[in-house]
Length: 431
Picture 1: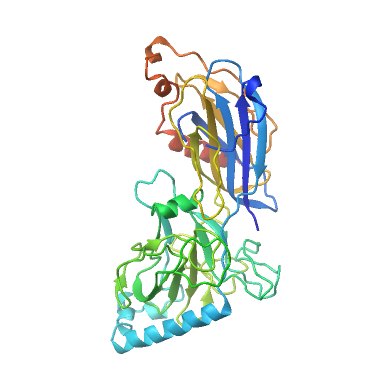
Picture 2: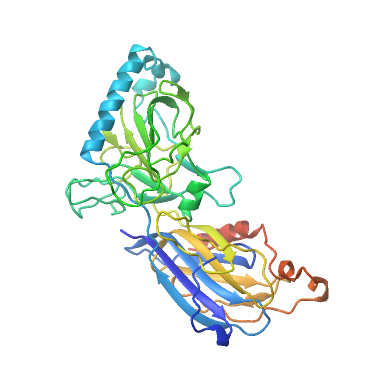
C-alpha cells in the first residue's frame, strides 16, 4: 500500500530543458521551505519527496519538467510457522531464566504496588532513533500499525479506525508496528545511522543473529531480533535487525530503557530496512501500544508520549549535483549530494516530508548568498507541482574570489533546519 510519493520540478535554461529531469536534493541553496496543510483527505503519504532544479547564473531561469511517482516503503510478514518457533524458543528461555532466578527479580524493579496499577505498568519510549549528532530530526516514519480486523484480505483497521496496516490472502494480519528511517534507509543501515533501542527496561530473554539482512522480498527466512521481558511480564519483540549489530549482552542480562539493542536492518521476511516492533502482555496476548477508538487490546496508551497519527514534518532538505538515484533494492540510493557549485551548474533541490496528504501544498523560497530572493513559488500548485522563477543576483566584489567561486555561490547554511521547522510551525498555528 504505497504512501510515498516522489515529485520533481526543474528550473533550467531554455536550451537545456530537453532531456533533463529533476528528482533530487542539501541545505545550502534553500533558505526557507514550508508545507501548508489544506484540510483532511482520505489518502495520506507517509514518505514524500519534492524536488526541483535551478541554474546558478544570473540569467532568467525557465520552468523545466515535473516528474513524480510513488516511493516504495518496506513491508514484512511473520508466518505462522515462524511465529510458533519464536514462541516456543521464548517459552523455553523464560523457563530457563526462571530456574536461574532471573525472572522473579523483575517485579521488584517497578516498586511496591506496581502490579495493582490499572494503567500500563511499563511506559514505552520510541524504539528507533538516529545516532546522536545526526543532521536529520529522527526516525519517525510509521509504515504499518497493528491490524485489528481479523478478516482478510483487504479488511483493515488500525487503532485510529484508519487503514494504515495490511493483511494478506494467506490469513496474515499485521501484528506489530513497522518503523523506518526515511529517507535513505539503506544508507542509514549500512552506516549504522538508525539504531534500535529498548523501549522499556527489562531482561533480554532471547536473541537471534547471523541471518542475511539485505532482504528485498517476503521469503520465509528467519530474522535477527532481540526479545525483552519487562518488569510487568510483558515482552517486546525487536525484529529485522542488521546482522552482527546486536547488543553484546546475553539472555538474562538487564537492559535499560533507551539502551542500544541493534541497528535497523532488513533481515528475514522483509522488503527493506525497518524495525518490526511487537508487544505482548504478561498473559501472552498481543497488545497494540497506541491508544485509540479502534484498539480493543489497550484502553490506555502504553507510550510515555504517544506520537500523533499524522505527524507532519519536514524530514530533510538537501542539494545535489544530479537527481537522486533510487536504486534497485538492496543497493543503497545514490544521493548525489553536493553543497558547493560552480557558476552555471545545475543545482538539484529536494525536500522529504512525512505524513503528507495528497492535497497538501509545499512552498519553497530560495535565496542567493547575498540574501536576495532567487524566485517565487507559482500560486495554485499542488504537492506534485513546484515552480520557481527569477534571477540569481550577480556576485559582488567581495565574493568574487578566484578558486572560491563555488563556495561563494552556495555555501551551506546550518540554520536551515531551524528555519524550516519554524516556518512549518507558523503554518500549523495559523490553521
